[in-house]
Length: 597
Image 1 (cartoon, rainbow, N blue to C red):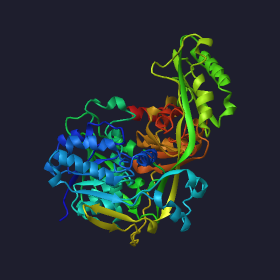
Image 2 (cartoon, helix red, strand yellow):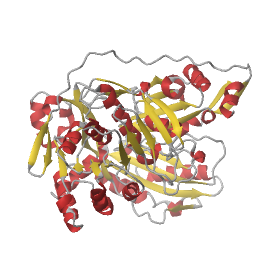
Image 3 (cartoon, rainbow, N blue to C red):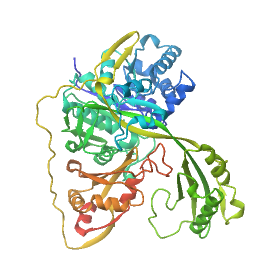
Image 4 (cartoon, one colour):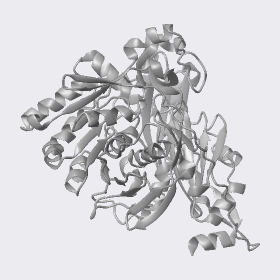
């Protein structure tokens, strides 16, 4: 029988997040599910290399450490755990969980499910021979171009196998590369008995999963208005109170730090977004349909989510070897530090053979222009000079670049020093990211619980007849007094930015309907392109989300190749939102007065 409410608790947004969160979420109050997210594109390649060295490796070991704190309590309280910690070796992860359960005396109450089928690394050649091109979604190039350098290949699976694992009675569900949103949607599908063609409710589950997938980013972390967060001590991580009709409330445990507001949730909705039609394996969720309401302190109700049928194909994340990169850093201080840092950089590059010797180089003055062009004309008192290079020749980086990072210190300008813990830098592997699409019938998904194995269809559910979603057109009234004032954009807006490969996104939220009306006319793709002209080598696209008083900007070729291979200081676009908010804009004074009211 379907339940009338469940509580899903997030216990981390990435591999490396606060290791105490799982315990705090379990001990903080009633929950039904604990969901734990560990994987990113680069993580899969790292895990694949670990498994090649040690067959028993290839999963997120931190999961076992965190589980040690909570497994007996979860079993005792009926809390079920869903995680993608399986990485590229979910069976080994299961074995580690079972060992822990025996050690803690709860193995007789443990039932572990493993979701298999996302890892297609060993089947790549047969898949390509069968006619699947696996063309790069950004460039159109066939995977055959880099086949000999592929390190991992994983299909993004949806929530159906998670729901099946729970139906089979598992109280711990271990997956590899399922979508982040599936961790939350799966329990909702299972508990509320949602059909796989119930697009609106599935879309609501996807939105819920997207809001909490990055942990504290929805409860006050990385929030533009960080001064409004009462405190960051014992920061509360998000909870979803979900209901059968698809509505849900975002909240956190009582007595914890942080903040849950329409704006903290709205910022997270815009994180790593593209077009408002958010494509997941389960369906397309329309982010331009979402309605947010402040229901009470630290409680935001989410409703009205609309969905469309699932996409015809599934996404594949491929990582491949793409050469090497190396970094060196020197602190330069005192009077005229920028001029001196420039001289140190010149000396270094001449000693290292010149920038033309390497396939790609970068020089940054951190504290001045490390992530973005400077915002001020006033020179800082010190900068950290960072020099970097990327090349296919590892020996060149280690013998021509590495030895000279500190070699010129005694023969250059005064007031410089290497970091106390920095030795001679060495080159490290660079991993390329290759997004592609694959036919659903090539993906064979199964769920294993003990000796029982169930197949889960990857087929696209038949499309039911229904009216396609059309977002409401909003024409806000823009206040006008005829008096102009120049202010930083942050006075009018909030923002959150993220990355997907070499593409960055910046979502911008208007603080009032009047601000949003001004944004529609003045905050254009050209404006954003010009602001990021030194960083964005491709086009900028703008999408409107009037329901959230928001615009989302997608910046192509904006991250120096992306987080897995970039030699920029900010390779994941984390600072882009704040840099855009630093832009100074001229607006009618009444708009500002309404914001300040």
